[in-house]
Length: 267
Image (cartoon, rainbow, N blue to C red; front, side, top):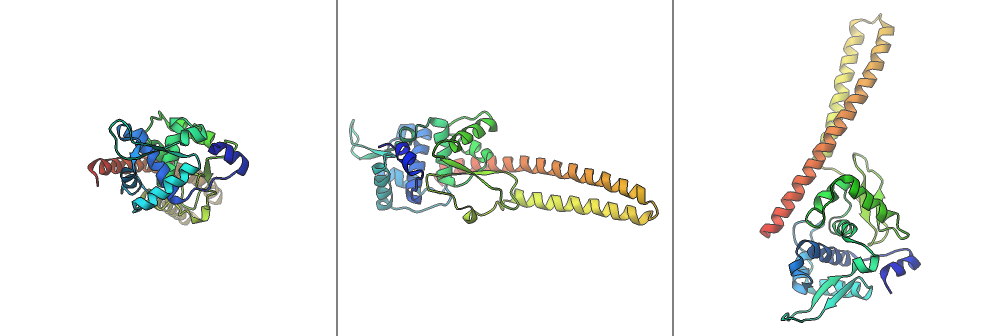
């Protein structure tokens, strides 16, 4: 029985961390290095435990990976490819596309979510570049919306945590997401946003105070000035948020490029 038939009955999938890592690694390698796919047990173990493009980084041994891939095979999510055409080792492939009825784009998004945890649409676009091509964020968002709107949703939009500027998405193949266990975004760009907003507010408040002290009898003018100040503050905050959003996107792209470089160098 295919997984989508099982989930239609049970309404939930609950794969372990090792099973998610195995499936995500198989999808990633199929789309990025098809000449090496399907993978041997040794290659799959290395893929699961590589230090780049993984969060968290793990150190699985072959028995752990063997048990995980055997488990997902029994669930119809993976398959064994027996030696042939000069190959001497058993190899492994995923069957997520067949079991879930997915094409390459949503499959790539799920792989990144399985390998790196919750991501923003911008991060997903950057980190799927080696697997598929999204022309803009609207295409990413459309695929995420489709995955979340399925009879049995495969992804979920997470509520924003304090300090966050963008929504993140999490995969549901590992079961329901425990939001309270997911740390809020504490990246340098998020800190920059908070600092910039506070500095802007302080500067504007100081200007208002100086104006009031200089002419205490001009109450009407002060009221008008305060209204203008409020509008100015709103515009300033909106501008800062836009700038910070652009900085976060650039930072995410740089991090992804660095991860790819490390992987290519075997770091």
